[in-house]
Length: 309
Image (cartoon, rainbow, N blue to C red; front, top):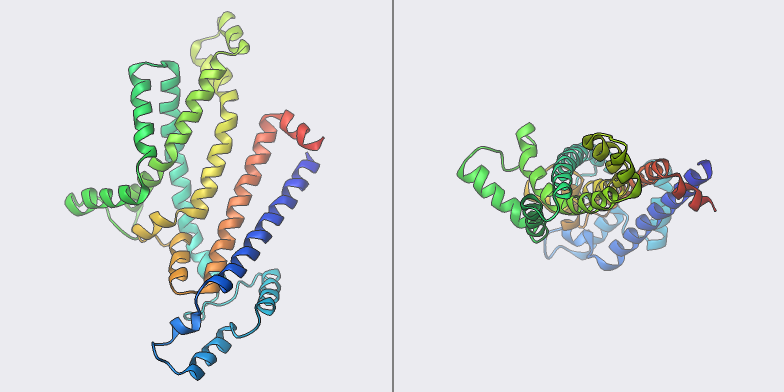
């Protein structure tokens, strides 16, 4: 197990380093000049050059890269081009909001997916199963940005039941969580349904039924234990995706999280803030997947042994 953990840790570090490096160079090669955006149109070139010197973009890109990596080793993500505030402080301020949204979304979507997936698997090709599959098809075809706008127009503008933007309390979670859950639940439902159908046909499940074990115990203990393996992976991946990529939903609902912080920084060519947001998203994604790998290996020792061979 130690060798397995060390190997996954090394892979995690390589992925984060690769993402950080790629984003750093893409921003400076493909993006516009931040100094021009920070000055009014038609500003004298001398003043624009002073701005470049102030924010550090006048130096060669390799020198900027070395300076950035040196700062990372000290836990310094740099300072924002707009306002000069430390990037780390801004990122740490936004991270809990995204983490709370991700946690509530995963809890809600997993619960809904388990109920619908198990119900569909117990009566395959029945009315409930067909209804669940219709929902899955519709949810897969529904764009998140469109659903978010429709929910705001109906529940916030027309009915006035729920807040449309910002984080004002527990009610503020309802619309963003529903929007994200509609995007997440279809894959979870299909995975649970298919895994449980295959597991309920296995020999050990038929043997448990033959021994007179109650059907509820057969499903919950013998069936779900094996069907949970792919579910653990999917939940981990989707949690990482929410932490790393709920950008559209955060912008539409003006949610003060990592996604909105990063997109606002992209609009202003705020390189340090973009790099900070991407770094946190990458770290969150690989850490979640790291723990998913450990959980998967603990549930199925064959995976751990295969990796060690």
